Length: 494
Picture (cartoon, one colour):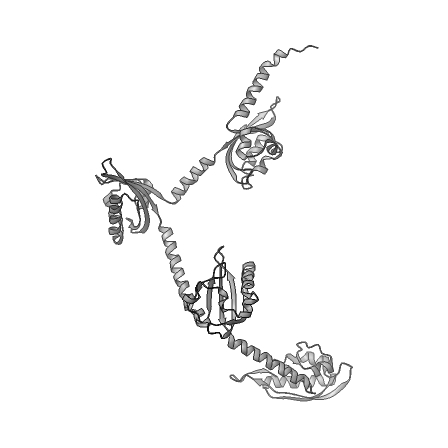
């Protein structure tokens, strides 16, 4: 069978033309399947826009090269197009560059139907609108920052202002605004400074850069930052000044509040004489030293600032690397507890108790807060030693010894009691003691007598039988005296 190939020439010519347009287009182009968002083909411009290879593009469905927040923006129109209900639509999305950053793009999708009129695939035209977006963001920033423009004729005194500039001065955007009105609006305390700044700028050619307060017609006080440059004629005569105005009221109020807060903080820190507050940089060098640190450690602030924070650690702790380990713990966990002996400037030692905390802002260093607890530490040590001596004595005597709290709850049983009864040292209540260790015939009487002692504060003195761990009952004379608080006289133990 013979075929006339010349009949295909117009089609082939059209295909070549379309392929050339597709490949040479400055805009990104592609064909996308409506069933699964996968690309059938993409042109070089589209690959270049995202710095991806053609193989990478064809292997990656559109949602997977879209910023996650933008994936579902066109879900509804895309589904309508897949059903053949929508011929085209346009959407702005952030696509993912191969290097990981976002590319703002405007996508135009057009439906291609098959010979039966059914939805087949879509043509996608992608336009890189990063410059357009940057301009929009810049304009938004200008509007958000209330940036106005102005021009002052230095010969006639005529002032020309933008709507935003007039709004900055509290005027209606459509009302006239003269230079005389501007000068009248400047706060009385700032008028001379403003006039001198203009004179200096015109005389020297330097930028006009000033911040002053204004009074609006409504009586509101605002802070404006004014920037400008003088312009001169060819003979050097000043012609005009042109510049911008920025409303910095909120910024100034925030800074003032922050300054007040910092002043209060400094006052609190400096006035905390019972606590040492020491700031350290990332390397452990002292950057701040309050009055409390001066009193506790003995170094004046001028002597301490700039020196290593390890100056008040004992020589043995410095040699063992304790200061560095403390900083590492604070860096890893946000804080590190410090309970140890430290050394004063005069060489005497004190027990420092406190914490080191890492400051939130990266690179800000650490703050260490501690106080001198030498007296408490020595008292606690003496108490522990006293308790140890008492236990040795109590365990050495051949009698059973027990201690309860003021309610009769058992707190201490000596070794003889534990050995005889096999008690495990639990915090027994009176009823539990009676049920577990006292002869059943004596339990009720012992509990009643103990109750009377607790209520009246009179000594407890009862003879009763106690059962041994082997099950043997032996008679004991049980005596208990109340121990009272020396100051209040209240019973604290038996």
